[in-house]
Length: 108
Length: 120
Image (tube, rainbow over all chains, first blue to last red):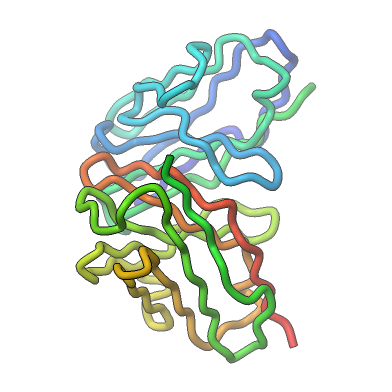
């Protein structure tokens, strides 16, 4: 299984809407598709699990959707603290855990 | 609150063995519904899953590393460990330990990460 994230870099301004994509090389269960946010020098933080469920304390401007081979993370209105790198991750295939290569969300 | 903390040498010589330990606090490693995992991140790059271990000692490894990789668990100390043999500069990375749910498949919490540099 390969997860391909696009775009590699996304340049937007605070207040804009961000749409990040994660494509799977084969159909996967949305049951085990997660999204993480990583800021410099810190460990990743879980944002979304089961493709569309927000993790604890994650603001509702973050939402996830998708099924099969196409998944999306949407940030409805960007806040300054949202500029970071985002990873999708799948569990249960081969290999057992797969990460996408990441999308860097930068301030325009 | 469940906390994970990596420990081990920050510098390893080429061809030698990298050994790291993750100490878990706030929960028992024998809790039963979690795997205990290692993930690494090469400088400026993405996340690479290394493998995970169940408290019984059952392991699942990334096939790209399994020839050099070993994981173990010490339930008496509430720790799990990673050993990577015959390291090269390509093994230089930040190594994270993290918990992953057996039936949920997502990681959390994570340790803060530890940078391991392979250099003579």
